[in-house]
Length: 69
Image (cartoon, rainbow, N blue to C red; front, side, top):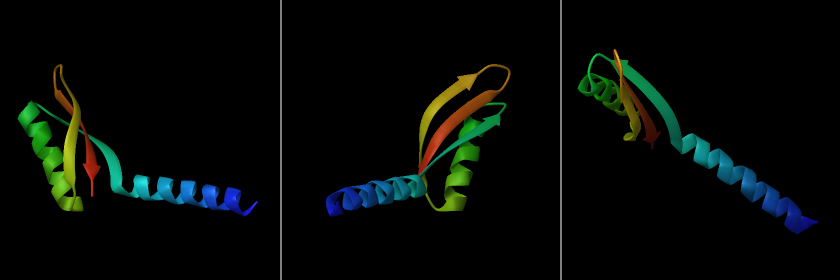
């Protein structure tokens, strides 16, 4: 019984720590450079780095990124 409680506690704590370190964000602008600049500004404001996970250009530019502390 103790081992099940320990496994459950470790699982919950690992999920909490993972969600506190990674966050997905999106930004839109008229150009890809402008959208990436918005992502970079949000990352700098939160004190984290970012990785672009997707981009699309229609009438506007859309960038999705993941912030990592």
